[in-house]
Amino acid sequence: MSTPSPEAPLGRRPSVNRGVLPILRSLVDEADGLRLHVSKGAAGETLIDAGASVAGSLEAGRRITEICLGGLGTVAVGYDPIMPRFPWSLTVRTWQPVVACLGSQYAGWQITSGEGEDPYFSMGSGPARALAGKEDIFRDIAYADDHDGGVLVLETANPPPEALVRRIAADCRIAPEKLTIVYAPTQSLAGTVQIVGRVVEVALHKAHVLHFDLSRVVVGTGTAPLAPPHPDFITAMGRTNDAVIYGGRVLLHVTGPAADAKALAEALPSRNSKDYGTPFAEIFRQYEGDFYKIDGALFSPAEVAVVALETGETFRAGGIDAKLIDASFD
Image (cartoon, rainbow, N blue to C red; front, side, top):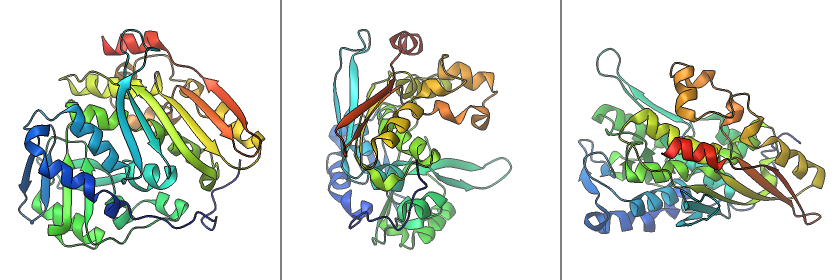
């Protein structure tokens, strides 16, 4: 494998914030039917509650996942008999996997303010990340967006306070009125969908950690079982992670030598982790709620296939574990 090259010929890069506008308008226009609440915040930002004070919906989660992908992918809810007891699945397809998954969807922006009794913390994902460019990953993939509006997606039950919203807008170099914040807690219908919908993103992020040249990843497709929501945060978080770790399947099409494609396929699956084999909620509790103590290799799909476009060969590794999915989802 080779180190990512910012100078690699990636072609014209689309604006992820411009690309999501039709999907964003559909959330606003159909808010009642999708069980969303749309309002204006104190700084003039648009707030879309997709599961905190409202029920939300799976369809809202599906569209929010497409927003997280910067409009560069499709998300479908379907039926997959490979999981006999939990056959309902989410399938993600992206034709711009690096920009969609790492330039937009990846939850890499820490949104924080306050100390003491009333701090605020959430991880930001979605297109607005590419306006702020706060993370090193944007340098690695040589991507930035300069649209005059931004959309930020937060996995939380509470929107940021006014001062933080103004700081987010300033970081994005846009007016607060041009910022839209979509939020839904992990325990909600929409929140569950948008987290499971990261099945391709975790594979791309793992490939980045492995120093695979991301400019060679042409197409990304992934499927994972649709986890049932749960009112307890840790249980809900565990189920959405297990959906990918033990039930996620990803197909990547890559250019370059077949040997590199084979090495990538063998290195990606979650079973390479020393923490593999236990439902995620139990692992989380074992490490006393400290994510940074969990082996990073665990955050990967269960099964991976990599197609080497140069030779037409497909390399496979890993495998799903239906019993662990059943143990997590029951």
